[in-house]
Length: 216
Image (tube, rainbow, N blue to C red):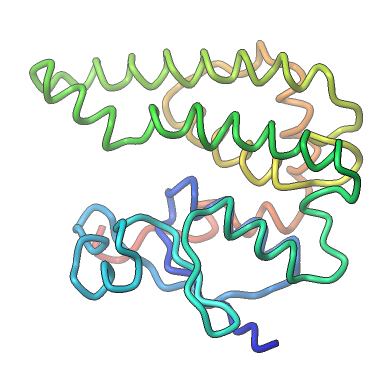
């Protein structure tokens, strides 16, 4: 199998961040090709030819283009012998998907920066509205996620090793910190964060390790 992963990425994109973590956990070094969202590089014809939705990330691997972060992570799991991004048992797979979807399909869409910006623009362009929006919906979403995690055993989101659920949670916590959401009231979430803090796979995927594109 001709892997040669190339990741079209934006340093602060939560979805891109998820895939960076997954690639690192699988020891699949990827060539990073920055797509600057702030300059509209995701809306160019060249990029739309690659990803018709104009979203990030896009992963080129095994000679094929892949989009949608969770679908990419599941593909990587299915094609990487020994992967533990999903557990072996059906109940465990359900559990990790449940946790992953709670972040990627419930919190992330409503807290996408373009959504918050549009809301603020409609309300007259007050940045305080954008901040209040983010804090409200991220906090509400994490409150529910904390309850879900209370049913889990092990230091990570599910069990004793990181899974796709951790790949989703950690980028969301980066955004939580960025928008000033107090997560200290979520002890189980903080325990999962602490469990991955020492792992190189997570450290090297962090936006600060990637850095902003030069044009910014």
